[in-house]
Image (cartoon, one colour):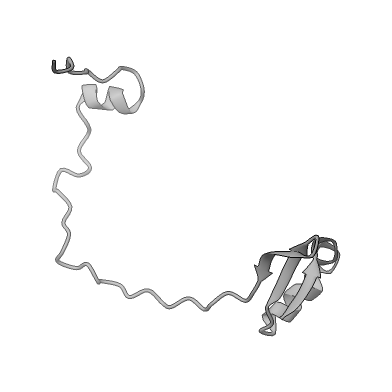
Length: 87
């Protein structure tokens, strides 16, 4: 694992990325103190579709228009009605 200073990392970024793609990890330091690690990304696992099948449902009126008073709240046209605080 190599350590490079920030200035060198900025000027040699393309070369450093090539090294990272080859599997190396590189530490970037500021004033001799490590501050970041440049490392290859782990490969993503493919998503498995259908894991929640039968566990969730969508209401039949999901796409129905909202009542005007609720729509006004979403659009910021009115303020919510607040209940008086309990004493």
